[in-house]
Amino acid sequence: MATIVYVEHDGTRHEQQVTDGWSVMEGAVKNGVPGIDADCGGAAACATCHVYVDPDWLAATGERTDQEAEMLNFAENVESNSRLSCQIEVTPALDGLVVTMPESQH
Image (tube, rainbow, N blue to C red):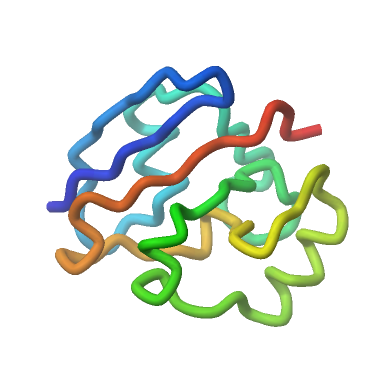
């Protein structure tokens, strides 16, 4: 398990224990963290799980896939550290990962 820190747009922090192998999105949804809608259920088909990865964690979370980059074209306020949280798999190496949600997912 890894502790993932989810930060709402207003700065509210949620530290959640997330099972290895789950996605960062699953960790939020299954723990009731607001701000990640996940309308497609994790299929990288909706961009409603958009997060900003803390710059210190970019290398650890890996590169965007082509499909992920394509879906982020539909998200608002995309930044260089934007990712779809459904595409970040939780591993022990991500213990302490910090992601921030945008103001809106739609």
